[in-house]
Image (cartoon, rainbow, N blue to C red; front, side, top):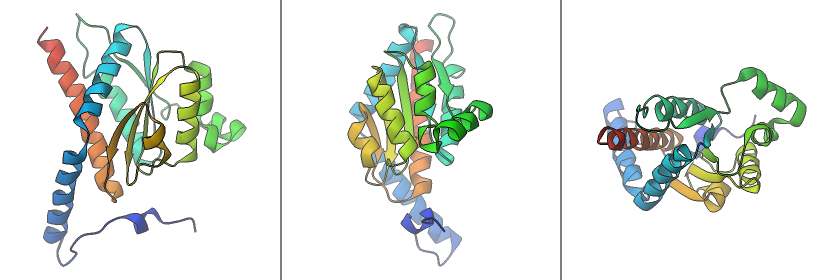
Length: 204
C-alpha cells in the first residue's frame, strides 16, 4: 500500500477526546499565528488586481485541498460580489469531472492540471495551488505551466512546504505537521481573504 499519509501527522494526547481536542486547537492556533501577514496581503491584492483587469483565478488541489479549491471559488466569486466592483472570476480545475478524467486518462494524472492550464490560462491570470505537502506532482507541474504562461502563482502549503513553497510567487505556508490542521488553516486563509475583500467593497 502507498505511504499512509496519517503516519506523517503530528498527534496529540489521546487519553480522552477532550485532551486530544485541546492539543489540536492549541496547534491550530499556532498555525494561524505562523501565516505570513505580508504574503497574505500580497495574495489578496493580487486577486483584486486580477479582477480589476478582467483576469481569471484558477484553483487546484487534491483530496481535501480539492474541496477547498471548490469552496474557495464559491466564496471568491459570490462571496465578494458587489455591483460597483468587478467580479472575481474564479474557476476550480477539480470540479469538471468529465474534463478532469479526460485529462488524467489522456495525459496522465500528473498533468491533470497543467493540461487545463494549457487550455485556459492566459498571461496575468492567477493560479491558486493548494497542497499540504507541496510536493504533489500534478501541483508542481501546474505551477511550472502557469508561470511559463506568465500567470501569478499563489501557493498554499503545509509541513516543510516542498517545491510549492519554494516556487510560488506568493507563498502562504502553514508550518505544521498535521494534514487536518494544515487544511483547516488553508480554509481559514481562504475565508479571511474573501471576507476581507467583501468588507472593503462594502465600504466603497
